[in-house]
Length: 633
Ligand code: FEO
Ligand code: CA
Ligand code: CA
Image 1 (tube, rainbow, N blue to C red):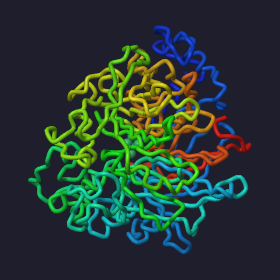
Image 2: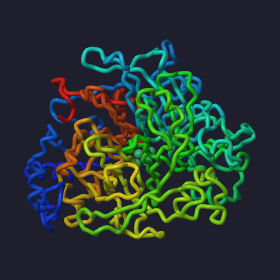
Image 3: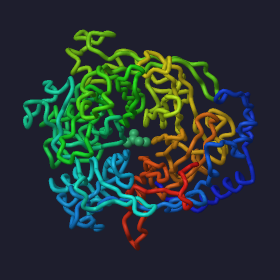
Image 4: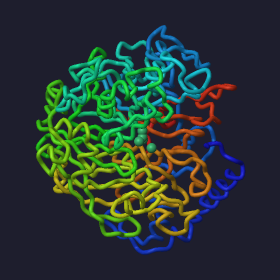
């Protein structure tokens, strides 16, 4: 699917060549005046200013789209591999076996597959040392096994489970380069069979009890770990996303209850097939095991012996990431998206205040608090970048109709079935909420709504922050909490950018908002990260066919935006078939770490080693400037 035909590359060259000469499509230039930031710019003036590159915040020129099996960067930048799938974490650990014959035991002590969200934790007493906690979201059987197909044994399933979860690694700066430290006592794997505690209001509930754990508090494993969060008290949050895909049923006539259906479990397990060789994942045998996944898990990276904890107070859904903020009175806030078509955006507020003086005192802060879900109004229907207002609706048992009459006997059931509770209170169905980030400059919250080809069907009318039917490009939503307080019950929203293709589609809405041009167009924004200067980095997981609606966009990529002016420039293009996901920075912001996930997902890549007949390997890349400056400045 990601292999490119030559005539498509030719199209790309033509488009990129035209854009270099300053070509702006008629559609990008026509249209009404629009607001951006505090100023009023005509659409044509904005397009010209973006073409010329007026942002003082962005210190590089937008690079061309590309279809190569390599990393493209602006002049003066370089990239190096920090770590790749299969790298042994311990001294004398088993080496990566590119044949696929490596064992499950070996994978349990190697860097996991398909790295995704990650956070960096600096050592307080040494600026040249840090830990990184890095998610390993899933695996690709094409490369995991020598036969390249579905798992055929319990051992092969265990290898797949070992490839997912989290890798904690130490890194050190040697000269001007950060390097992985093999053999560090902090290096650790947390995977699909690691003991994990369940904490918070749902822990111990009957729906979490299984034959193997009659307490409902001792789970095994975390998997499908998408993106992440970092708490102010120095712990890592890993988010369990497509967990239902790992479950199936040995009973072909399996009847699913409404909650199981809503979470999307199917008897055939979306071709992951763990249930065929591991009864823990067989709904016919262990129905409650499903309820023990779909949570946010907290990990202390500095204590390799610590038991990770699933924080049930944050609700159970297909978690993308967890963005931390703080209320004006000092409580912790966690913003979260549920990445499925038509699912919701949530906010958790802790009951107690953060103890900044004693980080360890916050160890169970995320076990007590209140969960909310977002409802958006229809907005002003501005065709370029609409704006409007919204509310947070509390998901607490006994409030807003959440009680036994609506199917929720207690708060544990509200949390375990958070999707059902959010529907019951009338939350707004969104275009697949992916990452959420909070600006370090003004506290505004940004959320990628990656795409939704079903918008306009199934009770999901277009409107408000989801303005387009059959939305293949995605948009980035932004909101400001009332009184600049993350505890607020209401907020004001706008769309920061509506992605589109102004070359293929001369007119909005498919041409995108005015800050999309032939120079920077992309589709399916997914990951995001702010640096301390307030640059917004945008990572894509979209259609890399470079054809049709996506002609001229090339491979998946990373862009950088100036939140004040709305200008967006393309900074990096990834290799063939990859998704760009996971972002973190060194403490001095002179190195940007970015994840290249599933290069060659469907073949056609040998990234990053480019060995003859070699396999592609997901990798964390370290991006830096040849002159040692701050990345992006
Ligand atoms: Fe794992 Fe929604 O991305
Ligand atoms: Ca994602
Ligand atoms: Ca995605």
